[in-house]
Length: 270
Image (cartoon, rainbow, N blue to C red; front, side):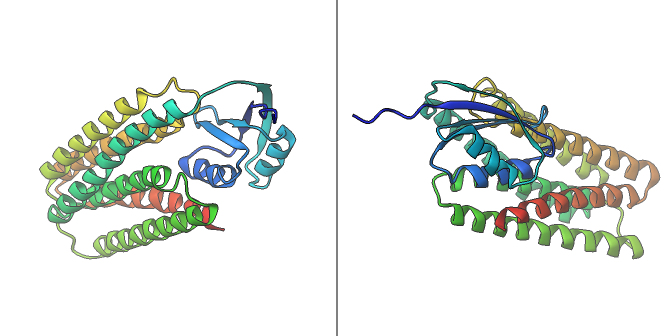
């Protein structure tokens, strides 16, 4: 009878892992390896834990190819059953995906109606999050080639929308843009904040699972709450100044933020 391969738990500090783009980059690199059984990300501490059966030196060499500044902290034998954890994680991710997709549609439609680039930009940020969860769920069992194709398509779509948004912001900067409906801006941004709060609550239900990447998701969902607050503040300034400039500024900031994330996604397809 063949001896069962020893399962190792190796923890790395990855200096340049500070956003979901690096997480996806590492996932595409390691999840294609049959010896890698599970991954756990902590963006706040920039730590990656890998459950694997190959030698830790082989794993370290694979991470080094990404040039993200990895450093092995420790490696030890472990036993872990991933199936139950993954089932709960996938259920939570489906809910979060649905909420983000819904509010992408809500913010985009109301943003266009209210002439608010802040809401349109925030809708794109919701789309970016939906793409993250969709990639996590839709191609988990797919091949490395499939994952790269999906990541590349998602990155180009996100970048195209961000560029179009920035172009519209510039047009309104130098044109006679309408003053947005500040009430609609604030109401929808508050609703989006509630939606992100619900997503954060759902993600917290799995934060104690060792192989889930929920901590990473919680971090950028928390960032989304700050963006929602920025749109609310812009709405108040639009009302106080009777000017579209605060809306255009927050819109430009969010579009640039999303563009940066899209460029990182495109690296996954290389």
